[in-house]
Length: 394
Image 1 (cartoon, rainbow, N blue to C red):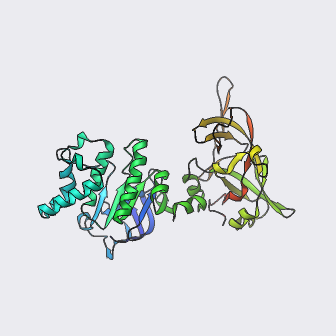
Image 2 (cartoon, rainbow, N blue to C red):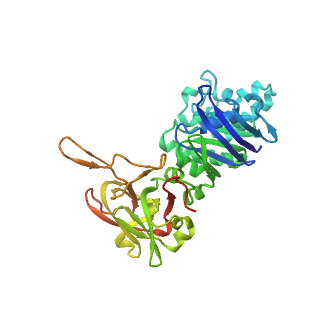
Image 3 (cartoon, rainbow, N blue to C red):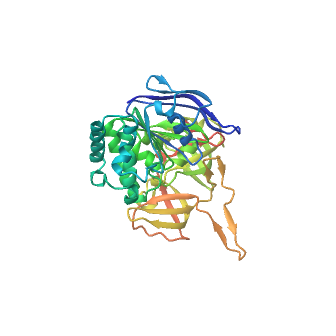
């Protein structure tokens, strides 16, 4: 096991495109760190630089106490698990798991013992004589994991290992990988675009966008205290509602205006976001509202309220998700810009408006498209961001 440290690491390709900007990360010995972000954000490039599969353009990478900038991949003592499994189709499961050990010319007895140990750990013992084509996707992924763990490396690097699996199997494998990492206590860097994977697996989660590290912290802290608009909009399912707003103060209270409606901000929210009142009267901000902080107004009469029109309803059994329309402008977190296409008019004169607000409501609630509903808002849990920079107003 070993600590992994990246200090001001850059990656610039020959055509001038910079995929990673000044990335600084410290992965503790035995930690499970998840790199998450949308496609093209630089997370896989960062992982490949740690592995030595991509050269770095600046900065330093250390594994343990050793700087590995110029060390070849095979000498870095890491094991990588790929999205595509990368199994040898002509070899048995046992031979696939043992492949790296045989390359190192370990004694046959040692190889057999390690393969048997990995097979027991991963429930692969009945399949050791089979070829990869005779296995399911989840079994193939476990073989790829087995090949990595028998080497007893200093660190595991995993590049979207579950993306080829169906939804149910992804949930199962998520739990298996997390348990395996806890049992082995091996330093692990795991790359995914799926924020649910990131939130459920990582000791800490590093959110990236456009090659820049946005925030790194424990999953719950990212959810409760996003550093900027991008993290707020990316972490959470459904995503946080982000709407243009303005701030006003008077009569000893602070209010925000959302479209034609307003909310009085509680002392708890002001204590959490003291920067909200520092920009003067009428300051433009973005307000963030989590879908679970919205309630049917009749069930929570003590709450501030917003009125919205129902556009679409998804009854999921455990909850009902309402896609709604407020008379306010939604903000795209990737660019901090409002959505320019708020409505479209067909050739028949029918106007279609996009939902711009999502509420997670109790199951079996009666909601119908086209109706207007009143929602109670838990203002203690609101989030506030600067409209220009996107930074949280803390």
